[in-house]
Image (cartoon, rainbow over the protein chains, first blue to last red):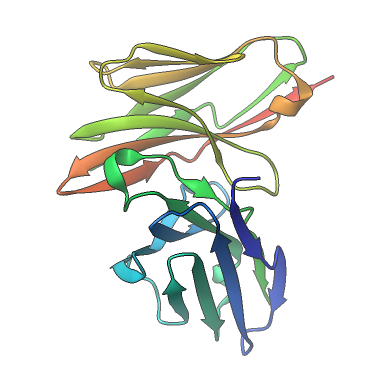
Length: 115
Length: 113
């Protein structure tokens, strides 16, 4: 276990649904990230939160809406998604914000399928 | 443009054999390089970190090398086991105002009995 827990593990949703992904870390880290992993592509950074404040939004469409109520929890709210949004969504945390390239701790991800 | 390229894309070897995975990067200024292992259905887990001054580092049967002059790294797996079947991702950190992680596309390794 990496100390980062993501739920649900799998999610199938229609294009008109609204759902949320949840991430929780018990490592005392200050930075949390959402990444998208598609087949044969590098991980794509979506959002970064540092001490609960969003520090980066990597040109992500507004149908993805992050929320970070505290340093231990991170949500990704989804609505009116497109089939091309189907991917593995990974949450990660690090002690400091992308600090000095330190280690990222990843959750197991949510495998999302949009029908 | 900061980029990380990995080769091969995929690799199949027999249990007990050795293999070497490659990572070439065009990242500047360079901070460090990490190799992550990602099992199917799991998130990546860090195997090792290489800094500018390090040439070789071992973690059990995994040995990473770094040539900062040619901007190349390799991950050598010795006496492969079935549990080594996974994707191996090379991640380079760049220091350019704020630190950034640049990910490779990974090498998918399959170890057969």
